[in-house]
Length: 415
Image (tube, rainbow, N blue to C red; front, side, top):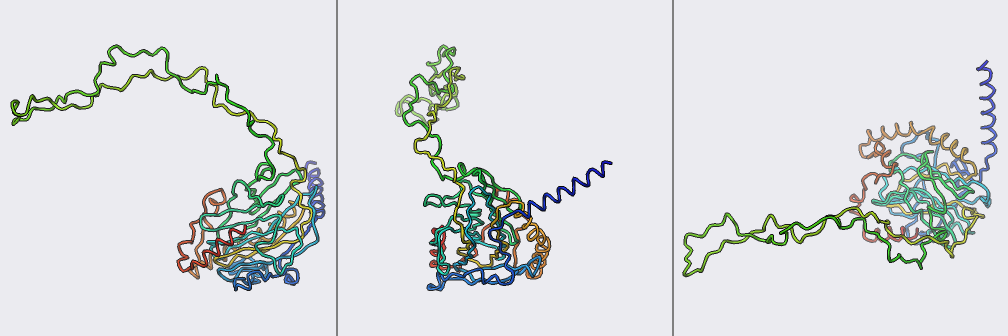
């Protein structure tokens, strides 16, 4: 009888799951299948300076499915910009899920793998580093910097997340997911694993703090913040002040050639007195009246004004990739903007999850065959837990010109 009861429940769960997925609203989804070029516009940004990089349509050098293609940066020391338009999205009252996959085949040393959501009307042929954006999200690597950007535009300012979220730096595909909820909370996932969660109010400085230290408060004169005090019961030993700092060296001997008449009366040299302990001080004891370190009391911040729409982006209409890369080879795929977390997880499993083992096997085979591909996939788990990541390739860039270094700086300043 127990079996008969479980079967209907199981079927019910399947039906519920189906309707949950079916009810997901997908605002934009790009798997880069046939016809993708009609949906995307390659920008002319930096073309006049001969610094605009070209995109390749490929599954990459190693992959889990040669038919699952994306777009990949193809030229070193270049800027890249490409965008796609979709019907305007207002996430008020909705969960917003922004997700995509990234693979750095080049053993990335300095370059971005992030994407942007844009609200303002733009000329897509001129989309570039100066184009205003609403959300910027994804991995960014340059030297010792290895982080997942989560930048929110609010009231005319781009706000970086306070505490950096580590990113993946190996040469395999990884899925990055940014979830924004109507209760002003968020989650950042990498490969369907949550790496950071919190509140818009605490993780970004979007609004002034609700409470501040009272600027008019002063520490009371009788506030006792001494952790220890002299022991009132401790007494200076008798004769303590009579102990000399130095004493005659008991081991010193008068030189044999010393002549008292010519040299005067010989006196032995002095040495520090081991019995001398310095000026007497009473020992310390815990202060029974210790009140702790004084802190100014908090008061309501008169400059704070809550914004119930802190999480809202009412007019998202473009998704774009705009970045600078020292070494090319970053591949983007499976871009999603939707309102359903489960749909996003399902998409990640159907793409990255389905092919990750085969991709890793292909990568390891390529590594053996080529002998030039250096893997840090084995120690990548340590990086994702908050470590400093794999060692930088910056020392290998000895042939990079000073001009190129300036361009790197300019590109990073545009963030």
